[in-house]
Image 1 (tube, rainbow, N blue to C red):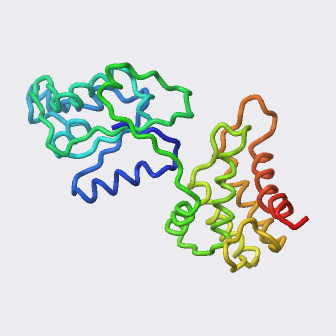
Image 2: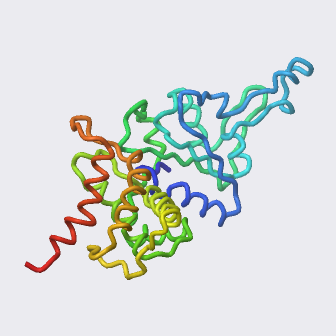
Image 3: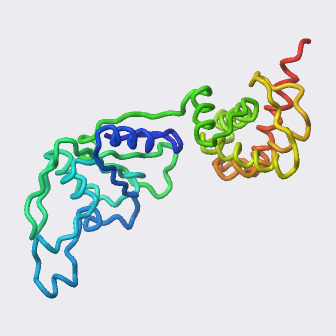
Length: 274
């Protein structure tokens, strides 16, 4: 199964929930140039090989073999960053559910064994094109961002801060970064989570009260000290998470400030009668 979607769309959370429900392990592997076939399949312990020669007993299983034997999920993040020969190592396991390991024998997969891969469709730096043979062995599920209500629920759950106004503002600002033409990839809900955490700490340090009101949109009549606090938190939480179009001269901080102005100044003014 190939999960294709931007970061922060709960792909890992989904897999943890499934494997926890099934009572099976979830093994993480990061796809990069260092993921060699031996790291994926396993290797023989060098010290024991010198003493005992090669044997099944001194074989140290890698995550692929371990997942096959235990019936777990092998989750390969950034699948298209792994070397081609490493991906080819998984072809037999995916198609026939068995692999032959030299000097060990054939490893058959337990019924619940799965290979789950993830890819970010917006990031092409350092990636490789998957071969047709790999694509032919994968089912694909496109994963996108949750709606605003779901993201607000995620932020409350992750932060433990149930402030409707602050949570709504954080989610609104993070989601707004995804709608700009000068931003190639906006912030995920992780940006909103960190924004709320940073803003709550700043509010305590500065003695600024967070408005306790329903999360109406667009926000109106909010204290200047609160909106300034949210701006400082947004600059820290969002500026490193947005990826700008290479043709623009603005900095990430400039874009975050514009998003903040649209949310707190332009939006309420546009909604005023007349």
